[in-house]
Picture 1: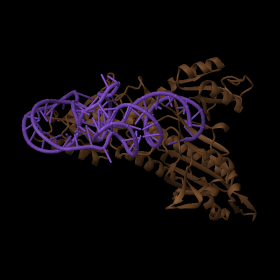
Picture 2: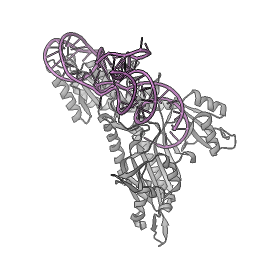
Picture 3: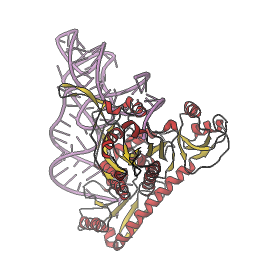
Picture 4: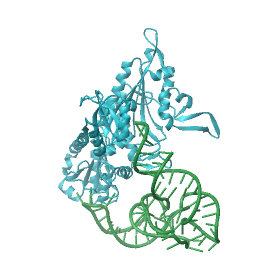
Length: 479
RNA sequence: CGGGGUGUGGCUCAGCUUGGUAGAGCGCCUGGUUUGGGACCAGGAUGCCGCAGGUUCAAAUCCUGUCACCCCGACCA
C-alpha cells in the first residue's frame, strides 16, 4: 500500500515533464512504434489488443440497440466531399488527396476519408425511399486520415482507427433520441469499462462538428489537468439530408427529409486511459479492458516443480475466466516485475518454493502496490474479486482527481487565475456569445468543453462580459 | 505553419571544434552460474555515420542542398 516508488528509471516522471512521460509510457508499454510517415504509428500487439477489447465492448453495446456494421470506401471524390458546405469547410484543411492512379493523373482527385458522412449520405439517398425503410442504424469500424500538423501517438495521429456510426431517422425526435442514446453508451462504457469518469454535455456552436445541428460530448480530465474529448454524438437535423437529397415518402404520401445522427469514438481514448490512470512506473490498465489481467511470475523457476506450479496457476485462472498469462522467460524476477508494471497489468502473482511449501502465493496489485498472501486453493475466488476491487478503486481515484481539480469561478480575474495556475475544469456561467468564448480562448488558451446536462446556476452573469447568463459551461485547456 | 532540437549497429548516445577510413553502454546470439524488485562471468554477431551534391590525396567530421522525426505554440477526434 505504501507509496508507490518509482521503479523504472527509463520513464520520465509525470511531474518533471508530462508530455515526455506520456511518450515514454507509450513506448515502454510497447503500445506503438513510430512509423516512417510522420504522424503514423505501428500499433503493436499490446496496443492493438487494447483496441480489440474496446471494439468488442462497444460493438456489443451498439448491437444491443439495433446497430449493424457496414464498410464504406476509403476514397471520396472531391465533388462528393463538397456537397455540404459547412462540412467541407471544416475538413478541407486537413484532407489527404490522391491525384494519380498508377502513372495517370485522375480526372477527379480523391480524398482519403477524414470521416464518412458524405459517403453514408450518398449511399442513403438511394437506400431510403419509404418510412418503412427507417431507421437505418449503421456503423463502421475503419481508419480515417486527417493531415494534422503536429502529431502525438493516439492523441493526434494522421491516421487513426475509430468507429463511426451513421443513422437515418424519420423524425427529429427519433434522431435526437438516438443521439443521446449513443452518448450515454459512450459515457457508460468509459465509466464502467475504462474507469474514466466523464462529464456529459452539449458543445457550444463554436466547438460543434462541421455540419451538425448539435454536438454532444463526453469530457474527461487527464492527470495533468487537461481535458480530453472522449467521444462525440452529433444530431445533424435534416441539413445533410437536404444537401444530399435523402427523402422518404411518409404514411401520408408526402415527401419528407430524413433526420440523421453520427457518433464516434477513436483510438484517442487509449491516450485517455494512459493519461487518466498511468503513473511513474508506466501504464495502469483497468481490469475490464486489460488484455492480460494477471501475470504469474515463477521465482527460482528452475527449482523442481516451480514452473509446473506456476503454469497450473495460470491455467486455473484462465479456466475461471481470468485473462491470465505465465511469464516463463528466463529474465530475472525483478525484470519481470518492472516490465509487467510498465505494461499496466492489474495483478501480479508470484510463486516460488517458499510459497509452494506454505500452500500460498504472493499477489500484488498494480493500482496501489498492495501485496497480499493468497492461499492457492482460494485463487479462483480471490483473483476475480480483486480485479473488481481494482476496477472500482481506479474509477474512484480518477473521480477523486477530477473533483479535486474542478473549480467554480464567478469573477473573470479569478477564472483566468485558476486556468493559469490550477489545471483542471472550471465551471462558470456564459451568456451564449461567441465573442466571449473567443476572448476566453485568447486570454487563457481554455476552451468551452461542454454545457453539462447537470446545470448549476453559479451566478446570473457571464464570466466574461457580465451580461445576463443562464448557461453553466465547463472550461479547460484540452488535448 | 511558426519556434526549437535531433539524425552514427535494434535502442540511448560519444566521436565532429582541429578531416586519416567507427566507438561505448544497453539489447541480441552461445555456454555456464543465478533467481522474492531491472543478476553475473566468458565468448560472439551486427554500421551505405538520414539522403544528394561539393571541397579534398582522404569526409561521420568542412560546405551547399534536401528529407525525415521529436518537442513547444496556432487548428483538430
